[in-house]
Amino acid sequence: MPMTVQSSRIRRSLVLALVIFADAVCAQSPPANPYLAASTWPLFHRNNYAQAAGDLPSLRAEDSIGFERLDNPKNGTSPWTVLGEPYPNGSQAAFGSVQKGVVKWLLDGERFEQISYVVLPRGRLDFDWYVSVLATGEIVTTNIKENALYVLRDERPDCPRCDLVVDRKIIVPDEVGELTIHFSVSYDGLIMILLKGNTVAAISPTTGDVVAVGSFASSDDGYSYHNAFAIDETNRLYISSQQGVAALDWTGTQFINAWSVPYDFRGPGCKEPRRSSRLRER
Image 1 (tube, rainbow, N blue to C red):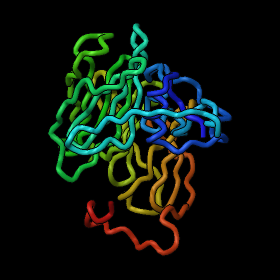
Image 2: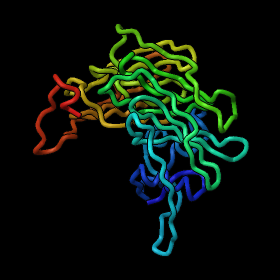
Image 3: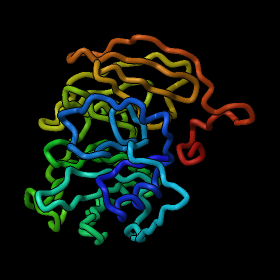
């Protein structure tokens, strides 16, 4: 069960608490995405392949392991944490999206501490867990209540102990569609985000423009998606929902359906989802 973080006992413990690792997954890593932070874990499930696994050696029986605990801010938990590019002094920020905002922790040698917490106007029953770090150092997260993306940054560039601030908000027009929390970053630098009803949008994180919207083939109504979807270096998206997997090609200007296959994600014994209730389905 290898893990991925820049070497430090404290950093090991942070990621160990978040992810299940598998040696086989680490055999190949995707080409680096130049639009993502140069860290080992800039996306929700680590990288564009959504591997959620790293390449450090497995722990052995004779190893001595230590950890430190930091509680999340009071308004919810952050089940997935991403890492920014190390600062010039060697320290590194970890970011998590909790129920009511975004938190920044700092990993500095043996020190592990919370630096900043930005409250966002999120819905009481929304779970905006997704967060990613761009090559610019900006942090992107969703805000389902407002049908928007928030872009945050350090108050000053290359400032490990600076607070986070909201740089801008990207509101997605209602006519485009209703956002889900599921997004990634393509190899041409666009935010690829799933919308309700088996659609996906390509959004520029710089201008906020919705570049294109496309539909993908699915045998269900697009109510539920699992979990972080992968994007390969050809900009093909692989999206799994309750009842199938679809591949969708991004050409730079439009989405084209490549293929789809049925897949029963729920398995035997699970009732059909109650699509009238987001809370019930969760």
